[in-house]
Image (cartoon, rainbow, N blue to C red):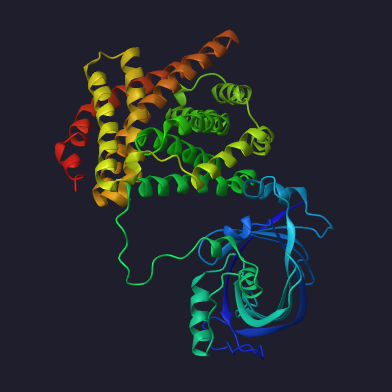
Length: 514
């Protein structure tokens, strides 16, 4: 069984003698408790081309200390990583193998580097004896294991690790004290990164090349540069969110789904830059993945909306077992499960999609317009999406209330979302006006989305009322909620003309032009 621990830590260059500075003067520290010396022996695993190291992920098997076992560390923000731990075993636990599958794919994980650390540990505690942070000095011996054993390298570093639930500001105060004592932050983000650099095991990031020289004027970005940066960011999001989805991290499924939609939308908006003969089939696979990710989420969101409407009703308008009927309807309507979703992520179709996205990123199917300066090409794409949106909104505003208007407003919502994503991608080329334009599209998308959600909720409420009636239950409350949703949709329709008048002002589009 795996345990997850959020680590917030900092590393410092230290003298070879490994002496720890006196930190009794740090505010809040009442006592420094000597916890002795432990020997930690860790073997780090990665693919031959170091796919994990390229994404600042470490996977190790470690003996010694209080947490011997297999450890997988995933980036979680500045100075923070989530460490997933499993008990010590001879082979890699399946649950950890699954968490790196989106990076590793069909490649073998091999022992890459062995690190042996002599760790001298101090606990910094407050006046109540509560742990504030751990301060340690590690004398590290690193040895390359592949492609062939190399000579060992040694160094000493000091590490501070915040106690669980602690205030990161304490590490700031501690750092000020350490730097006054002559320590400085380590240039390497982890022991493994330093070991890779100093033992001669080249990493993917080393092979990627360096940026332009200091003072060298950057070339004007092309349309291809701008679009590919956005495409690659969405691909990275899809891959990096895989472990979070498997761990059931809140909102991770939604964020992965949004990344697939952004990527698919980008393919459509910037078809003058990327060849649709290549991107359309990928877009179909992204649509499939988004649908799989949304099987239960859409129903959960709909259920939450109806529950919110129910909570708004006074007691006298609630008749019959309404909550129980809604709960039964929600459960029986679910078609997916976490097991199904994990099966999708482990399946050949998904892994093939990830490989295809890798190939797209490495050898993008660029069209001639991709070589042109970004401004005109990107602006044309954004304005083209806007014009499609404008045509649909105009049609919706002219239509009488009813089914046809509902459908047109839903189509307009999808076009608003595409225009928003196109503007997001355009920001490096068009600057702040693109950000402002994307904000306008978001406002419009939110209004149209609330209208569409109301349409879907009314369909669900009609179904619930029919089920209640068939079961001999009173359906009055569902009718009341239906009426309230109908009134909300009418309000959104009434708000649309004024919002569209603001969104469609020429000056917003004029601001996009260089």
